[in-house]
Image (cartoon, rainbow, N blue to C red):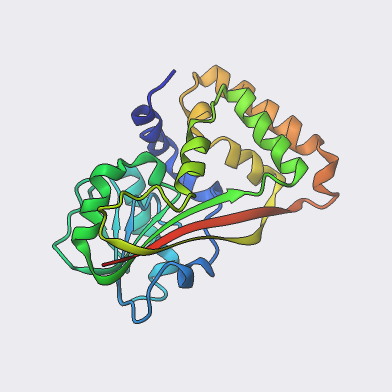
Length: 254
């Protein structure tokens, strides 16, 4: 089975599909994870810029740190107003006390909190905010839960990522010595409009699919299309309202 490191680096091979099909966070999440008077924001583990493009509309200075050059190139195309930097959460390429908020969208589970938390604290100004976001499909809806089970079964995926996400959605995981206070955990329900073909494209952006041999990927895509287009619960229209939950965890720098 591929290691977490190998899986985390698999997305760059399909960076444009990742950018096209992954459902980014809703615009309303920005207010929930940034402090009053915020002017300078760091999007850490920014990928192709799904969150970054929301930030550049709101704040005068936006840094986007992403280690994969392929993802970062698309980010730079999408968000020319952001400063795109090569780096990781464990070694942030910014000076001390240089940002008002550090945001991590659907990437914290790839990071090492023991190393990332001190680095984030280093670059945050006093009273700055750390906001961690997970934008997920709402598995409490039966057809969505079945779709997720189908994807995992087809690609032999396990629940390690889901287990880590559930852990980080708890309030008490932060080490007691970490210089943060006022931990809050909440969720923003919303819906995304997607076509059935876009759902198939979305299923093909996960590591279990991307790391499969080409002939297996072709068979998987046929299976994705048969399943999605054959599920009557999605309605009769081509466009589907995908139920989403944008979970967030936030804390203030002491």
